[in-house]
Length: 68
Image (cartoon, rainbow, N blue to C red; front, side, top):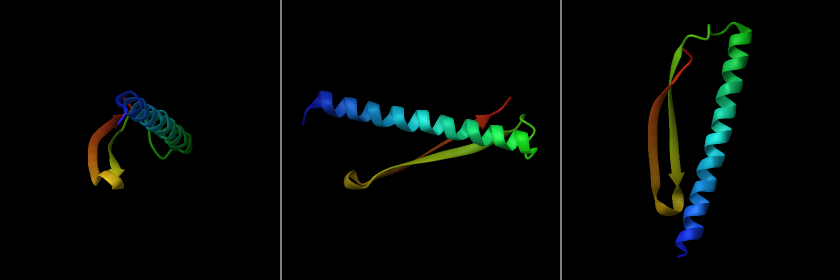
């Protein structure tokens, strides 16, 4: 195993997930505020599931998205 390749690939994957997740959340909040579905002061429970089938990893991470 090449440790540097391994670490870089993990970082690249996590960066892609983080950037794309943030974009999706921001767009959803913008649309919901514009549609009047939410006020923009809410908090939303959120979770992400990390699955790597070849390594038998299936882990859930819970958090909260606060708008104010």
